[in-house]
Structure formats: C-alpha cells, structure tokens
Length: 79
Image (cartoon, rainbow, N blue to C red; front, side, top):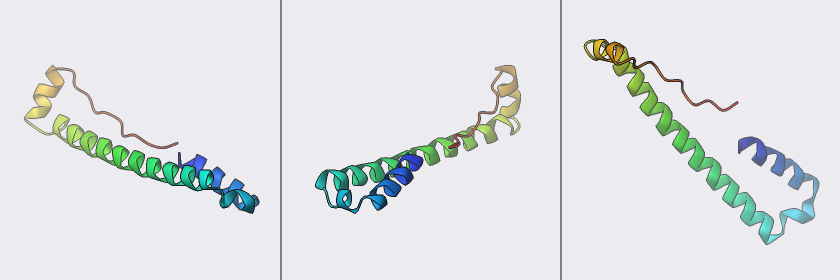
C-alpha cells in the first residue's frame, strides 16, 4: 500500500487539477487510513511472533516445543 500511496502522490503532483476533486481527496484519505491499519496489524503480528519465538527457544518450554515440532516463525516484512 505504501508503494501505491507514493505512486498516487506522484501522479497527483503532476496533475494539480486532480488534487482538488473530492473523490481523489477521499481516496487518498482512505488509502492513508488503510496503510495505517496495515502497519498496526503488521506490528501486532510481529509482536506476537516475537513472543512465540522467545517461548519456543526458552527452557523449559523449548523442550516441549521441540517434542511437538514447533519451530520459530518468520516476521512479516514488507518487500
């Protein structure tokens, strides 16, 4: 979404007439809100993943995790 916002911003900069349209302003606002929500969700997921990974590697839970084939999970990264 961040890439889309950046591209949209560049397009709007090129066309000053579009910047003043209510639909474009509303779309920009909605995209910014969505980007914020996605960032918050990514941070929550990565926090939960960090806690899980700590538990999987901390004794005594690491012993149980190994027996149950629990493994560390990757963090969510934006490419």
